Amino acid sequence: MDKQQEKFFLKGFTLVEIMIAISILLVLAILTVPNVLRARVNSNEVSTVSNLTSIGKAIQQYYMTNDYKYPKSIEDLVTPNSTPPYIDKDFINNVKSGYVYTYEYQDDDNFRLLASPKTPGKTGVRYFYLDESGTIRAKEGGGAGENDPPVQ
Image 1 (cartoon, rainbow, N blue to C red):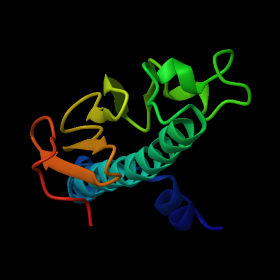
Image 2: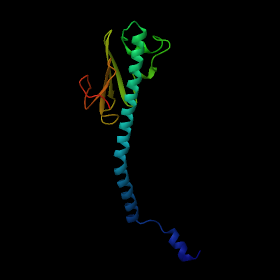
Image 3: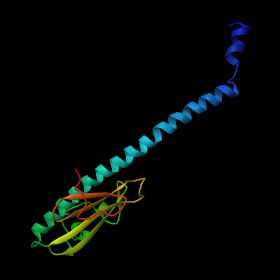
Image 4: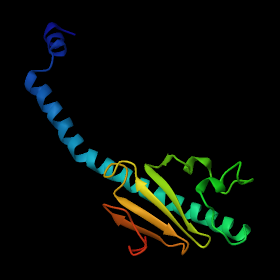
């Protein structure tokens, strides 16, 4: 390599070149971050619908095997209260896929299961509701109830 080629390779980037590179990276980040966050919210909501379906089926199994009475609390579905357990212990007082699950015993023939985003807007935007009918309902921006539209 001669001296002129060596000078070319040892030359650093100018401030303008560095600023252009940073600007390009910033534009790419601005374009991709909202899509990544939206994908995470969608993923959490799909997972929550699946979890509600599983928990709802477990509650119905409990109902059929315990003299047609719904459990008084969600703890009745896990060990040591049920052996073998109907659901995983992770659903009790825990966040799963960015959602908090709340079971409400109404009476022997009625219950409500709610799923709310732990951090609304970040982990999810829809609130979910399930009762003894087995229909999962959803509402954006606040608690879902029996009159909200079913999840498609």
